[in-house]
Image (cartoon, rainbow, N blue to C red; front, side, top):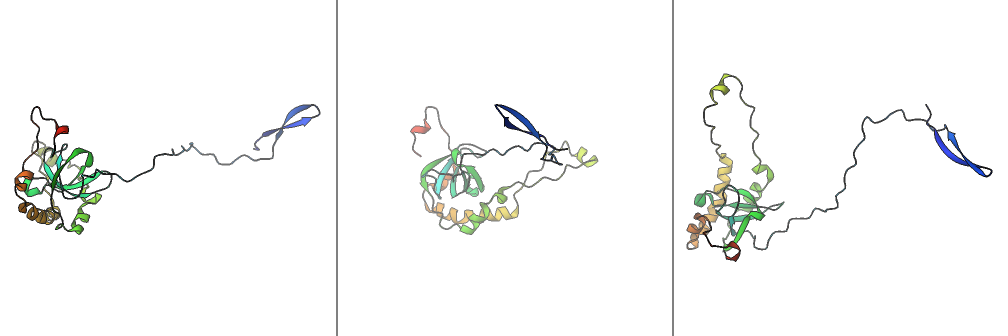
Length: 202
């Protein structure tokens, strides 16, 4: 079936619309209308960190599972995250990523020159911190009998434990050289009544 289009033509003093049957109708029509992709005006810019967040600086975590703990900053990562460690032997904080917004930078600096840069590059990737996919739930009598039991605690893999030791070893030797630094990192940070954090120097 030909598609009818109209054009306006002048006849004498008046005008009249004339239909044309030259164009053929399309044989294919989309089943649904495609939505247009919205264009964002915001340009992606690299994260700008505070000047105080330099590798080797001692930080205080103010949120998360280890809030109140003092950690050592190892490396600045992408998307506003930082790679930190306790070290684990001192305060139980493992290698982990934290948001730069939820840390307080102190004036204490730790020498991290002895830490292997290749080891830091290995543990700073997204795949290193991704969670393992849990297997499908067991079905049948075994799953029914294990409902009352406590779930097993997840233990770190031998590879992660080895990476933790290799990074913490040079840090611990540098920390022991500084007086009172071991007890400082082992203790937790807390505020007492009347203390104002914005007026304090760390």
